[in-house]
Amino acid sequence: MENLKIMIGPMKKVKLLIEAGRTRDRMGLTRTPLSFEFIFGVGVQGLSPFEAALEGKTCGESVFFKIHSRDTGELFEHLSPPLDEFIHKVPVFYLKAFIDKIAAAEDREIVSAMAGASACGQGDCGCRCGSH
Image (cartoon, rainbow, N blue to C red; front, side, top):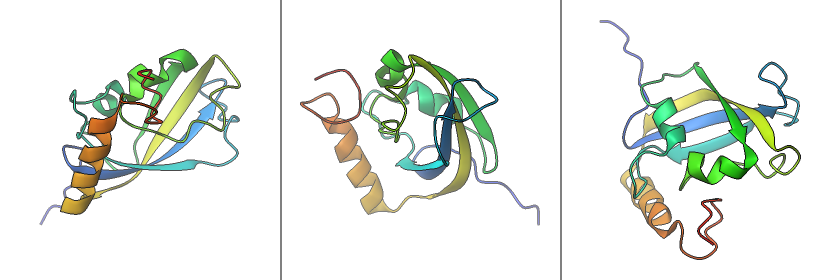
């Protein structure tokens, strides 16, 4: 039987290892890769641009982004990756998102993620969405 790789898609739990740098080739803004786990596809407005770039990818793949710090809210929308370590150091940075793990999300994880995503933009949600 052929071994099919699980792809990132709706309601999958995705674990990324993210790194940031001043250039695409030098990820020196993060000391070590930072773990970031989320449920894919639970945003109230649909997929964030960040999720759209990850859709269909499999474990072991990497996706690179060139990001203006002021645009992180638009890129990530309801997601809150651990950017605080470096986001205020440079106006533009490169982000490498290595796909470490993809798994089926449990029902309680999906409900929790949906509740968090629906609160985005209301008060100080902490997601950098700019609606504060």
